[in-house]
Length: 257
Image (cartoon, rainbow, N blue to C red):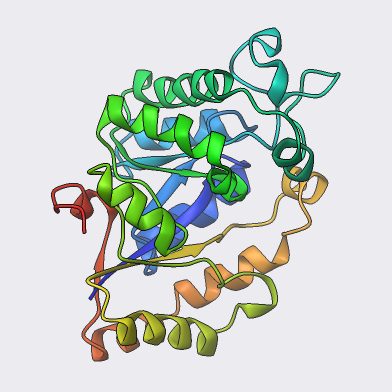
């Protein structure tokens, strides 16, 4: 089995960026996805442009910070201040698919314009579970021909029918109280037992900085993830199981399904 260990939230804060870089250079993280509208975005783009990382996905965001588009151009996505709505408010409201597409394109183009090789697309807070958002995402994917994270078997089959590369198996449960070395091994074992050729495990490593403390409730847990992902025993266990670490760049050339 090929295992993509993706670090979400690259660009969230400088401390999160530092943790992700460490997890990729010293640990088992093989892939990351970049938020294009956050305080650490400029720092993350600078890291990528210096070539420390080969590529990054775009962690398309509709639920944190301000849009890259003029808020007047995406009114169904923003609150009265012009900031993105919170997830529950966004998904329970009346969404305009063209506005979602417009903002997604702006985020992808910002990353591409910086000279970054884009490896794949996924979404912050998994908002592409919403039908309107998934349709907009598929429109964007058709333009760029990129792999996409699928969250369940139904979404996976839909992406495959559209010719979109996606992992065979996704695990988003290694989070919060679930984070331990034992749970990492258990969740990867479940992927092996499923018979998947390619599995993605979502992670959120980081180093806590003041910006993160002010903006997120998920703080010290990122450092706990980082320690486990950089533990030599984690890599050794994967080797013993016959799991090969891979990235979304490896998936790009594989036929869907």
